Length: 140
Image (cartoon, rainbow, N blue to C red):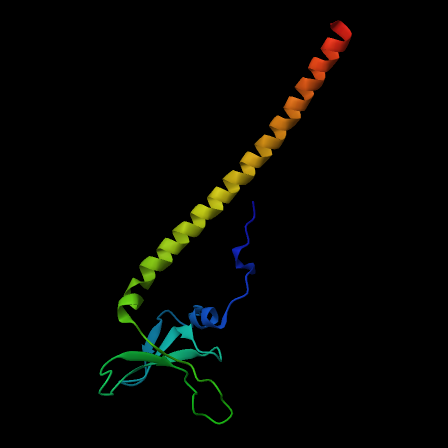
C-alpha cells in the first residue's frame, strides 16, 4: 500500500522548521555572535542566524533571526527564541517520529492486506452458498 503522508499543505511555521541542509554542519560561525542555523529557515526561505541576547531581561538567551531583516526591499520579520532544552531533544523526537511513521505505514499495509483477505473470504462464502443451493435444489 502506497501511503503518501506528504500531501498536506505545510503551514508557515512548518516551512520555517523544514530542514534544508546546505552543508554537512547545521550551524556554522562567521563571527563570535552571528552563527548561521542552516536547519531553520526564515519566512523568506533563508537560513536563520543565531544570536545571543545581551539585554538585562534575557542575558545570554539565544534567538534566531532572518539574515536580512533590515535590508531595503526585504520585509521578513522572522524572530524566535531558542529553547535549548527542546533543541537538545530534537534528535530524539525526530527518531521517535520516524519510528511512529514507519509503524503507521506497516499498520496501514497490514490493514490493506486484511481487507484483501476479507474480500477473498467473501467470494469463497458466496461460492460455497451457491454450491449448497445447487446441491439442495438438484440433488436434494
